[in-house]
Length: 485
Image (cartoon, rainbow, N blue to C red; front, top):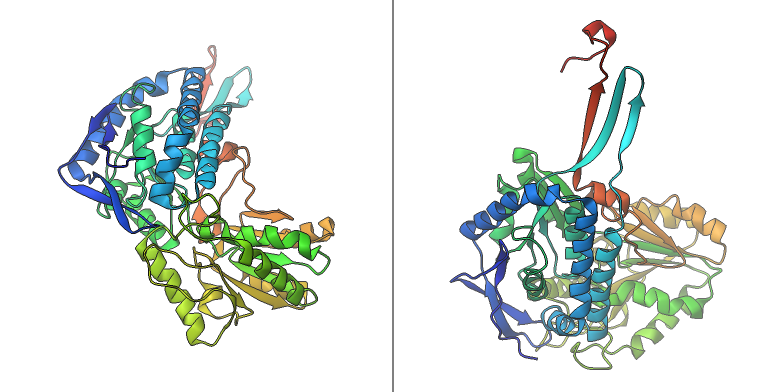
């Protein structure tokens, strides 16, 4: 497949280019495969103006009309899965099968979000007064999308925002802009002009978005450090924000598990998408009674998994997506080497081409080591031994993060009791990374603010509006209980 086509932004339903261009690098080869527009303030102003102009008409559509157009987005993704998957593998690095899976998930999410209703709550309906709370759109929403799941996490923002009646400006990561630009192109003939605008740019574009006075809400997925800067910028004019941020997700494995049965599940819990998942297992606490057997079983799985170019048929894990993250993961591994940690597999990184890091498993490093305390966001996993479950819970909770966790045990009642003590927004029992458009997802502590998915996620893109109607025939006075503003 050729990647040297012209890639343009979508603003007000039209193709828009810029004189400045950004190179897109294939992380498996480190070669530039194409370039995309590098937008600045002028292009962002145009996108926001288009979204603002389209807002009255879009919010005025009946909910069923917006539902139908969301389903049309789902269809556009589904009808173009093969071409989009090749783009996604080229820019992100994940194997083609995983790229197809991400796109299937994006289509399913659009279809599912389209089924939600916006609730109306009648809090009073008396002879004197009717008081009703509606959910109304916020206005122009900006979605800032990361590079690990550029289509699925983009749809997580686009679908609920559009359903609720908002118009959208979406900015994909400069590392992975191609699939979202292509989606914008596909939707030019489906959505009214200005309803969905896709802009691409370098490091300067994100701060322009969060500071823009014409944007009413920002939904951001990325690191906690960047999320804090997003929130600070949005505070200037009290933009609404949803932040899905970092995690250092623990798993606790009890001694009654079937070691052989869970080993492969635990391996993929940590290493799917080469560990580049915010909800990947990043600290694996194993009871001492099964520690040696389970670590051997996990290493045996690792030895069977091939790392390589995602276009190769037998590759299960691709490269780390970009140079910056590659160097960060290398630094974590180097720190473990410097501190004398034992490696069960991996730890030796060859120099390119490609941002490849082998599956790396560290054997019971100290709790205060960097490989335990920091989110690797790459194919590195510490295995950690514990003797008592209370100790494991305390260690699992001893972090600034609280995104997700899992508990593994043959005793589901015991596992559920442990899960209830973990400080995380999502806790799985005997599975991991199972998400649903119908179940709320959000982080505790410094792993985020607000919610995605489920009804709560849709309502993040609305403001409550209460209309109180005094019924004819009785004059209200302050003594009747009216409260002045």
